Image (cartoon, rainbow, N blue to C red):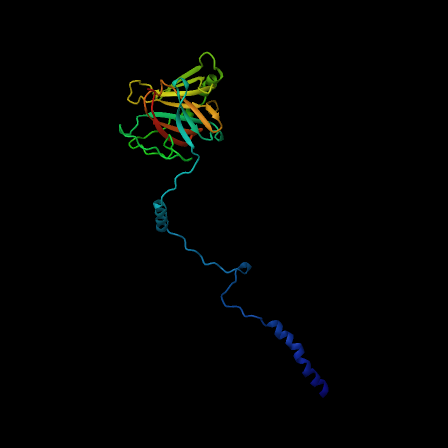
Length: 267
């Protein structure tokens, strides 16, 4: 019995040791700490801005200079004399990339003082430009286009196709008046030999002080030398006076670009 008791006493740690190991933690947990999912370090919350801070940020953004809108521009624009004394407005620009495109022009008095000949700016392709491609400021003058595309629907659109489809017999015309403005659509052969359509625009009152004309050129493929060059006839009767011509290129009813240049008139 003595030997049996001693044997049990010696083997007792072998039975108790696993109990001690299984019940113990290898690394004690830190009180009050919950690890984030995935083991990543928890991010500190960011305080949201109040109305005062948001207003200051908006004011700071408003003080920053706005970048000018960058878009397609003509590489050159010039007045070219043709045979028979006609003058054309020649525009080098990839017009064919723009659907439903048109060009509008308006003639206004030149605000430059008489006797002064300002130096012409440099063009985008280098050399002396015949137009103001750097958007030279014309002080004291606010000029807007006609926005003829807004009228190009219904009977007016039908009249456009009629003018295009009847090149013979001196062409066709269609006139209408809206808001005391007279629009005269003219279809006839242009200097390129195509049946082109343009619209003369003037005030209903012929004695109005604003007698300087405007015109819209439609269906630009009939006014095109190629996919990058337009040649627009400037009629002697419409653009007899010298001044400054403002030019707008439209895609539908949206202005893509605008330019202006000196116009010598017909003398």
